[in-house]
Every structure is written in C-alpha cells, then in structure tokens.
Picture 1 (spheres, rainbow, N blue to C red):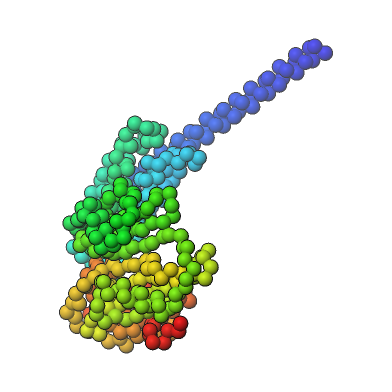
Picture 2 (cartoon, rainbow, N blue to C red):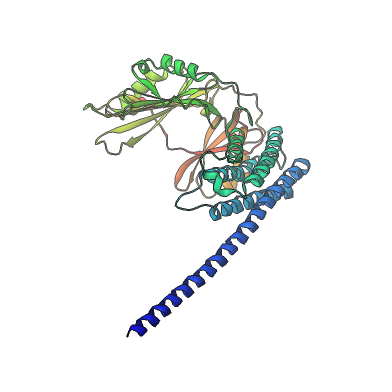
Amino acid sequence: MKYIKKYGLSILLIISLSVNLIGFFRLDDSNRKIEETNRLVSLHVEQSIRQSMGFVGDLKVSQSQQSMQSLQRTMQDLAVTFKHWVEINQMHRKPNKVMQQGLSGIESMRNLIVHHLNNQYIANNNQFSEYDLELLDKLQENLDHLLTVYNNIKDRIPELSSLGKSDGGLVQVAGNIEDMTRLYRHSIIPNNHPNYISFEEAVAEAIKQIPLLKEYKLYDENSNKPLIKEGVHYYQLKFSKNKDKDNFYIVSVDAINAGIRSFEVTKENTSNKYISKTQAMEIALEYLQQFYQGEVVEEMFEMKVTGEKNTTIFAFRFTPVINDIKMVSDAISINVSSATGDIVQYSNDFSESNIPNYTQNSTKDEIIESNKEVFGDSEIEYEGLMLIRSFQTRYVPRVAYSFKMISNQQPMLVFFDVETGKQISSLYYIYEAVNLSVISE
C-alpha cells in the first residue's frame, strides 16, 4: 500500500509536470505568434504612414481623383492597422491612455480626409482651394512627425504607461493632428487661429453684459483656451453660487469680438406660477431688443421638461430680415420656461453679417430639376432667399435658395448657392411660424 501511494504520487507529479510543460510550450508558441503578428502589424503601420505621405505629395501636384481616392484608402488603412496595433499592445483591463490618444488623433485625421476634405474637393469640381493645399502641407508635416514618433516608441510600449517615462511625443503629435482637424473644419479663418481676446477679458465681458453674474463665482478657471465650433470661436465659462449645487450659468463669450454667443441656466424650479405662450413671447421679444431691433421672422416650438410636471419650454427663434433675405446665419434663439418666466437659454452664432453682392445664375426651378436625388419623393416648399454661413462656404456669408422638405420623416431646410447652384448647407428644422395675435392664452 505504501509503494502504491509512492508510485501514485510519482505518476501524478509526472502528469502535472507534463501538463505544465505542454502549457509552457503552447504559451511560448502563442507568444511567438503574437510577437510575429505585432511585428507584421507594426511594419504595416509604418508602411501606411509612408504611403500616406507619398499620396499627399502626389495629390498636391496632380489634384487628380485617383490620387484623392488613393489617399483616402491609405488613411483608412492606417486607422485600421494602428487600432489593431493598439489592441495587440495594451491590456483591456487597463487601457494605455497614451496609445488611445494617438489612435484618437489618427481617427480624426482619417475623418478629415475621407469626409471634410473630400466634400470640399467635390464641391469645387475636383480642385483644391488655397486652404485645402495649406491643409495638405500641414498633413504631410504631421505625418512626418508621426512616423518619427512611431519609430521611437514601437519597441518600448510598456514604458508609455509608466509615470515619469517619455511618451516619445505621441501625445503632442496627436494633439497637433486634432488641432489641425478642428482648424480646417471649424475655424472662421481656415487652418489658423484668429486673434483672440484674453480669458480675463472674456470673463469681464460676461459679467458686464449679464450683470446678475456678479452674484456668482467662476468655476473651471483652467478651461481658459478658446473652443471652436462651426466658425464660432468662444470661451466657455461656468458660474455658480455654490460648486456643489445644481444651480449655475454656462456662458459662451466670443473669443474674437467679446459678444455673448450663448448662455444656459440650470437651477432648481421652486416656482408655482405658470406663464402662457403669449407672456413667454412678450418676455422673449423684450429680451431680443437688447441685441436686435430690426424686422424678424418669429418662429417657435414647445418641449416638455422631463421630470418637471407641467413645465414647458417655449423655444423661440428670431431670424433677422434684411432686403427680403432671411439672415439664417444671424438667427437668435431664446428659450423661456413656462414655470418661472425666466429665460433659460439664449444662442446666436453670428451677428451683423454682411449680405454680399450676388447674381442669381440659376432659378429655383432649375435647382429643383437638377437636384432630384437630394429631394427624392418629398414634397418641396420654397422658403425664399436666405443668408448662410457654413463649412461649405468657409463661414463666409452666401445668399442661397432655401427649400423645406421631409427627410427621415423630419422637416429639413436645404440651401443652394444662388450663384453656383450647389448645395451649401442643410439642417433639420422643427420651428414653425408663429403670429403673436393668434397665440391663445
């Protein structure tokens, strides 16, 4: 019996060692395969960066559709292979933030080329503007920096997540790429920052133009860099009486001319009163006088506030009208709460836009006839001439024919340049015309 136990333990030990040895060899084999896969993917990433740089150079010279398609293809390939490289080299339980930032930069670059640059290229009859060519120069420069950084970090991945270790410049180059993307897509001066007022000036102007902010304290003072969206450069400021209370003002101050671009009020509703549409309209019109005193088109819609019984937001939109042209770019939105009569939101992207000289080279009927694929089977209503500032116009004012249609079961406005006949913008539009004299109490 004693010998049986002894031999039995020996056999179990041998089996255990064999299993562990087999596991070791399998693990070693798996590691070698992962290393080989990583090496191949790494080479593919480097190859995609080099190919992208080459196609950027070709595209600047030829401006051909073939070169444009080749660049789009290599950019998509770069985004996919870089993502694969990141997934191989990081733990899912503890993602590598440096590598994630790098991936984010490359994704934004891919989106820039495949969508935004391509849209401008097509809109300009397969030609590039000076802004597009400037972007391609910056793109090539950033790709060159990315290649240098990538070669510096690809063999020392574990260090990237270690405190005190250099990231090899990956975060900086990713930031540069994202800044390049924002400036091309959103800046009023494509590819560049305009001259800004200081953060301190923006705070002072907010308090000057909205005096009740004197009772509040500014929080998030570290957010002192201008944000950019759809041609508007602004500082976003958050004021509150108590940081821990859900009662604050979020104010956007134009970083160029110090105008109030928007504000939003968030506070607990303790009022029991209720105001009518007519009263809300009067409050909105009175507030509008601070910013604009000319003729406007009055529109509105209503929305119920989730979690607040019997509270409605009356959302008004006032579009200035000059020489029978609706200034959509300069429209002012004012939201009034039915529960308090307070203005809870205000927004205005542009003001005092100039109507350019224009020639109507095509009629609205010709626009409809040549854009059947845009309108589809939808009923079309002509809405008149409107002034538009969009990415397609580089945020320069353009006069456009406007049409209302239904898209995805939602009302939409579509705009076509009166001179070129090309579509320059579109937006879903839920506002409806309102006449104060027929609003019921």
